[in-house]
Amino acid sequence: MFYEIVRGRRSVRVYDGRVVPRDVLTRILEAARWAPSAHNAQPWRFIVIYEDDVKRRLAKAMADAWFNDLRRDGVPEQEALKIVEEESMKRFTESPVLMVVCLTMKDMDRYPDERRMKAEYVMAVQSVAAAVQNMLLAAYVEGLGACWVCAPLFCQNVVKEVLKLPEDFEPQAILTLGYPIGEYKPPTRKPLSEIVWVLTSKEGMTPWEI
Image (cartoon, rainbow, N blue to C red; front, side):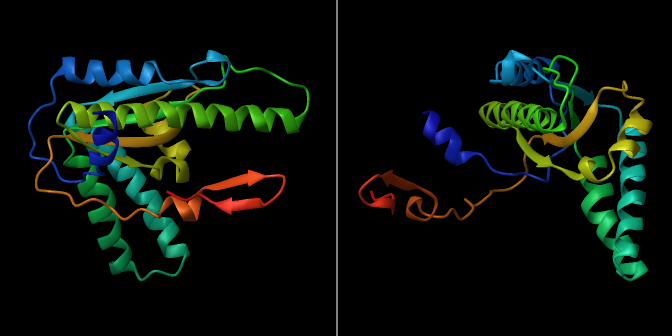
């Protein structure tokens, strides 16, 4: 059953508009809450957005930031406008629920040196990612589609300002959630022989064989 869930989950970007019940979201958030985390610090924070007005304000601010980046990259104005409209404005405003995933270092360990603090921050990022994976799998079990969007990483201050987030909340991702439209084919995956090796003192690294 578990392996079917892992293989069946897809990134879904088009939803039918039905409201996602609060109890369904609660179960998904509970799944996130039970993810593993460094020191059990649970450095994740989640902002649930239902209201269309808030979605529009967030999408518009992020789209403006992305548009400016595209123009600096030399993308023609009309092409840049089309990209941000289809990939940012439409995606976020047409999603029944947006889940803004944030990281906080509030309960992580503190060190006097930059090297260890950098490692501690990476541990927090990994912990948040584990919580997101739990949410994606739980959403699939609940019959929902979801998509993990990392766009907030490129405009964290914009997201924080629009949503008036606490100072220690660092936006890491947005999950779009809703009931999916259409069928989604399985994505390609590299074979285990390309991504897994067995290490022995005699032979060194050898590809994993089934």
